[in-house]
Every structure is written in C-alpha cells, then in structure tokens.
Image (cartoon, rainbow, N blue to C red; front, side, top):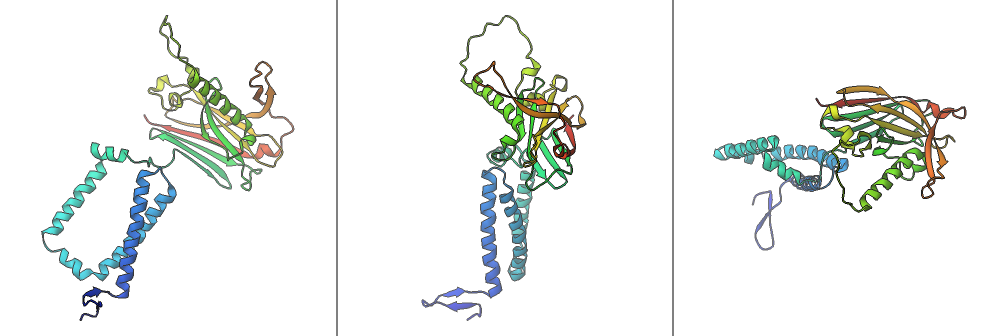
Length: 324
C-alpha cells in the first residue's frame, strides 16, 4: 500500500496526501472561493473599494498558493507540458486575453450589464494640512480643488464643508460635495440654495404641461439652464456657459458663522488655474413678500466679529483640465 493512502472499512483506498499538500490544496480551494464571490460581487454591485481591495489582496495570496501547488505537483504538471494540449490551451488563453483586452462590441455589451461603473466621480480627502476634492464626470473633464488649511483648521472635530455649482443667476445647479449627515445647520447657505433647487424641481415635476403657441423661434436663455452638462460638458466650447463653484466651510465649536468662497469658471480655456475668493458669510433674512417661504439667506461682507474663522483656509486653488 502506498504511504500516501489508507484503506477504508469497505476496502477502497482514500488518498490522504502529505500534511503540506492538504494545507495547500484546502487553502487554494477556499481562496479561490473568496476570489469567485468577490469577482461576481464586483461585477454586479456598484464600485466598492472594500470588495475590490479584498479581491485584489486575496489574488496575491492565491498566486503564492499556486506557486506552492506547482512545487507539490511538479512531476505531474511537467507531463502536461508535453503534447499538443499545451499549445491548444495556450492559444485559447491568448485569444481570450486579446478579446477581453480590446473589448469588441459583444464584450462591451456584456460589460455594460455590470453595476460597477468604476470609482466614484467625486473624491474628497481631508488631511491635517490640506483638503483635496476631485471631480471627473468624464475623461474629458477633470476638476481638482486643493485647499491649503490655515492655523484655525482642526481635524478633530473636522470642519463641515459643502461644494456646489451655481449658474450666472446664482441658482444651484449641482452639489459636488455634501457636508456630513445632520450638518446642514453648519452650512446654511448651501442648504438654502439646495432647498430652492429642490422646490423648483418639484414644481416642475408636478406642473401639468400646457399647450404652447409658438410665435417665434429663439435660443434658450443661457443663465436659465439647470442642467450641469450645459456648463461642465458643453457640446461646443463656443456655446459654453460661465458658472460658479462655491465652497462653504464651518469649524464646529468656534462660535462663528460659516464662510463662503467662490470662483467663476469659463470653459473657453482647456486648462485653468484659479484661486477662490472669500465671498462673505451667510446671514438669515426674512422675506415678507413670500409668506410661504419666509426664510432666506444672503451673503454679507466680513466684519470685525470674525477672527479664527478667517484662518480656516490659507488658499484654495481650482484646477480644471478639459479635453480638446
């Protein structure tokens, strides 16, 4: 009887293998199971750095286990290298690799079924010396806002930050970065602008279409557009609309209102570097002419009551790269 086998009660042989082989085989099988599950989840679910990270790191573990598997079974595997099977399997592997790499129409259709659309368009990193916000809704448009922090900035607790876009008329068109949950009170100007946009959207959705008599054909009013694509990704640079990026920041516990920084953006330049300017601080005013919505916020010039809040931000640089 071979030393690597034992006899069952019914007389048949059951392979046992060496302890090392058993460990390697079981670990390989279990690791492959994790890779299979995370691979399927990465395909059907939205992008998750946790799933992708687990899949990638377990992949490195699997590579090491495959190396041990080759060492344990090198004699048997060496026999597989002889004969036409090797060349046939190599050819199949090369064809599939090239097919998946170049991604012709059918392959792209299959990939289109995936719920994983890649990393989020927005990324916000808050460190001790700077805050960096990246926004890339298209390969042809990359926005980066780099905020160098000042001496009043603290990470514990961190400041509440909101970043959004407005058209030339000052209407909210898109929020790029929301403040933390329940922190809208620390960024009241953003909350006010967002609430106005939500009311306008609800009213537009609930309004019943009415017949329109066309007397003349005219182009749309540029500043009336609420579609972010009209500003960020215009079909033609000459038709692009200027817009504004605003940043509202508030350090909890400093006893001072939030501050709003802003910059106007023009798409006519393929690459721009612009510094945000301090626009002011928000203050609530009552609109007696609108009893249904008496709350309104406006920006006021900085006065002598501000001290440490002015040192939250040292500078804020906006960089935009656009495709030709």
